[in-house]
Length: 123
Image (cartoon, rainbow, N blue to C red; front, side):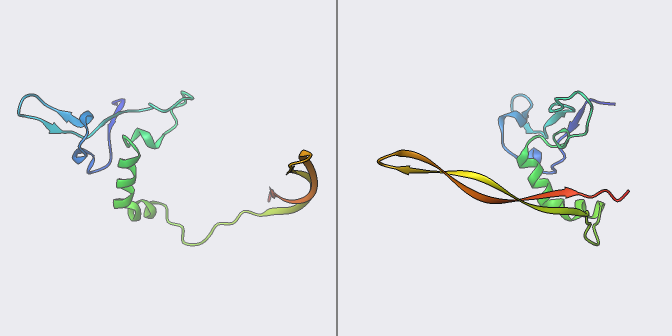
């Protein structure tokens, strides 16, 4: 098996960049970019990565613009999914800073409300 893929954007070979130019003399062509698999796999764990299939963000977005419906149909979502949670409001004292030309910066306390969301185990 090869350690390389060709960019999956069907129009990658039409984008005019120097890195795509191949050939000699008058026989020049624009070629689809060859991508080394795992080039952004920093953990060395062979995790699949979108950049193993697209040479850059432009090609990825061109591909999605053309095939978004087909990609969505690979894993359809006919109804919404839900995750049970517990919501808790937590009041806590925080500080603002007010600038006064006479006293300089002044630390002013206030009460804020923070929302904590915790998942609920259904086991």
